[in-house]
Length: 416
Image 1 (cartoon, rainbow, N blue to C red):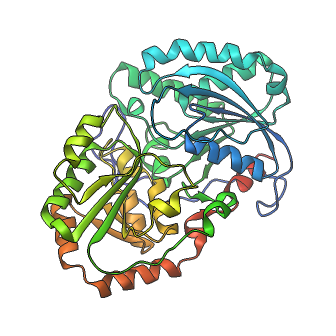
Image 2 (image 1 turned 60 degrees about the horizontal axis):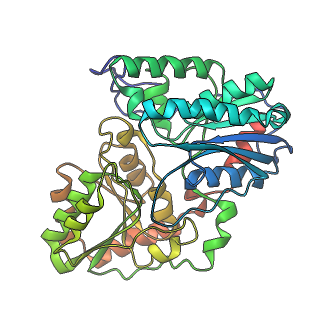
């Protein structure tokens, strides 16, 4: 389903916002409401320390399937190391790097060789689950060389910049992805706009797909539930939290402008891993310097530390400009669900999937450009009564809005 075609780049057209289409049906042998049968998954991850890798692996195990993780690692000095996935076994594929595909390709070849050392496990797998295009190439090649007949699941949580470039590398990457999509049994996305704005109109995809939102996984909720305090004091200073991987430099600039404009009536708290390719430590330090109403708490463990970092936070900053007009407009980020679960209302951009979702589900507000001025004006006029009313609506929502209690199980049933 697509909207009217607008001017785009090399086949990567912009489309008017549309409603999410229903997920196409795969032939299944049983209802998705029942538990998936026990099977074996070979999970290929781009970074074993990345929180969503652990999230997926834990969900597969919670569904009753065994999982062997084949994963690269990335050199990220400093911060809090994420826990290793609770897999039945982990096969290290080596060290790789962010975004530098020229340096990464030789390491992917090494990863294939290392994966083949476990060819018996690959042959025994019922499903090969892969994250991102480069891992799909590693997994498909290793599986075929090992003689595996497992079904291939291709998961995409972001449409990377390379995939929408109009030049030769972008065209090659899209051609490779189309080739892999033809060989995949199921495409998994975290937001419907990825289908409506990229996979269908750009890649011509017409296969089976599954929506697995970036919700907090239900089997991990016990770690945080007893420490959650979703209540809030509905009065200034209004506290905005920007948490997760901090890579949107424009967001940092906008938050600093809000801090300058509102002074003591606002506090802005940052926490998570700084993406130094996008925001250098020096840039962050210079931004915080002289702004006592802005602070950086550093890295945290997810989901273990969510109750602490969200404590007293009125608003979750769910704004991204990194790929403005493309992925940034299409995604539904972790912050949207984590904030709602922990009692924080969402601040988002209008005319984006996040903004539409926040407004439609009454999880917060979406603002037009220029964003700094819009948010500043909103906070200046926000009354305690208005905040309390919106927050009461958030607390009344079913926790299934924020927590995934069976998404992976339903996905695996589709492959049974």
